[in-house]
Image (cartoon, rainbow, N blue to C red; front, side, top):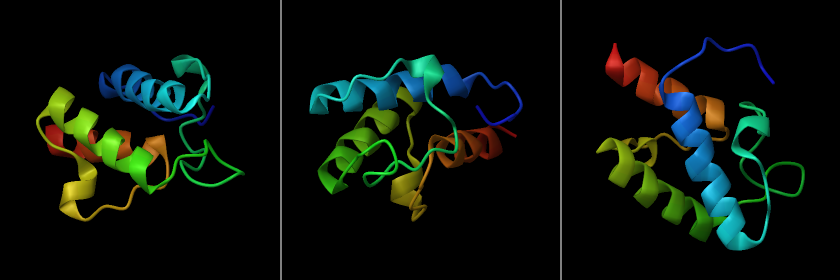
Length: 89
């Protein structure tokens, strides 16, 4: 896992991503997901555009905002975490 500072957002973001993956039939343990693993494609977690729409909705429900509605085409969980961390500072 990439050495990013520990954040309050990381566990919840990872749990939401794992939930979206589970709904798609991809079983990932939230704490085992590399923050910089690509969200998309066969070399990454494997999400597609519909999965990202669901992810965006769940993030907005959890945090009241989401990076995708701000034009951030997040390519990794780390980018999503950094979005929330920068919003919190």
